[in-house]
Amino acid sequence: MVISPNFSWQEIDKLFLDMDGTLLDKYFDDYFWEQFVPETYAKKNGIDFTSAKTVLMNTYRSVESTLVWTDLDYWAERLGLDIPHLKKEIDHLVQIRPHVLPFLDHMKAMGKDLYLITNAHPKALAVKMDKVNIRGYFKQIICSQDVGVAKEQVEFWDRLQQLLPYDRTRTIFADDTENVLFSAKEYGIRHLVHIAKPSSKLATKYSTHFPSIASFGELPS
Image (tube, rainbow, N blue to C red):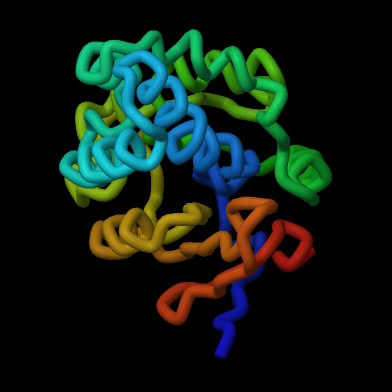
């Protein structure tokens, strides 16, 4: 059974919004790490694609949910590839998800404070904002690199409180990753929304733990 969001915007002062899979189509990242990087790695090292992908997927998993997982400089050194440059090579795949811009416009019109809260590395953020410049919607953009820990860690939300004081009972946070939402819940953020269709290429998968939407068009008006 789908858990639908149940709140009033009168209860909300601040919106914390994830980037990849929430505002932007996660297909870019999935394709980049699962197809484009393995192809490039295979060519550089003279091995077949299947072998390269197996090696890389195991390597990715070894640091998943940690700060280095999204650190482009770390991956550039570890893989011997110019990761920021490779992202630019396929930046035509960077796309805003459906209903995002009308939602952001509506929230601004309502006088809500919008913040982009992302695990993305600043260099990845720069590539994406160059393609879909939505910076102007946000009072502040905070990367996990600024905080010092990934959003999957409860400590992230405590440190964020020091950088950006917020009332956890009057803040709504939207993300496509359940582990991130669990950490926000443990910290005490009351209003949480799961994005059930982060990639245009994947089927919708609603959360059984959190209020869940396929697009921002499903939120209360």
